[in-house]
Image 1 (tube, rainbow, N blue to C red):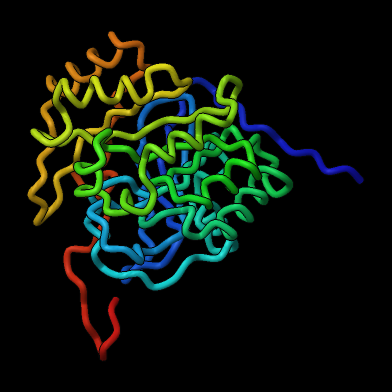
Image 2 (image 1 turned 180 degrees about the vertical axis):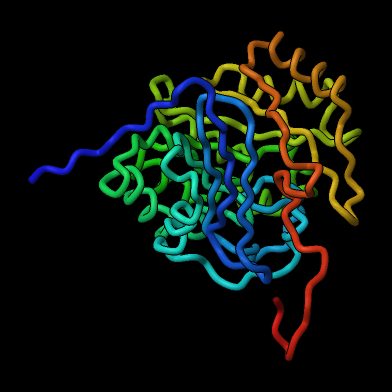
Length: 292
């Protein structure tokens, strides 16, 4: 008896689902959030690390100054736990895209990441790998293995084209300079269906000047890629402030004029402290020495 797999066909407009899953374990329980908007695609964001082993200003996989980032690393999630997050969502039959990011660096949990992608894209869900995106700060040599072993999309956390500034925002720049990351990525073919994007959070007075736009264009202008400009979501106790929308728009235009494919990422969930980089609990209860 041959089993047939039904393809979901949206009837008119459906609700887009953007879902955050993690790749490792933080001091907090896994937080799953759905954001809805009227579109014809359904996306899910996942990960595999719960908190970071490093004290970076930026959360590695989330690519954001993260309210959870300083709470401490506990463990990486197994491929089973990663996949379980997908099936924990009631809307899982409507998913069209999957993104690995959030609460840590996916490539720090590379074996389980690759295994979960194999389940999703090879035999478990039979998805095309181009429906899956993995976000990273550019961990070498894990990035090379990831690029060699699958055809998923790639999103790289950039945030500054200048070494000293990027080190201040992301100390992992010391170990994995963005120049080396870009050099590696350039060796692969991005002219087909597989895509690479560079994520760039806009901070007022930090990385939003014409000087930064010119340096980005020099770094990526002749490369088949896209830059995603992201509005910073203000979090408690952070001294960083987001650039204004007019500034972000001008920055985008400067890059477009230099031939760099550039978009501004839509923001959702800030009103409930659930936008990218904002997920956290307001209080950490201590009970008998354990954190809940």
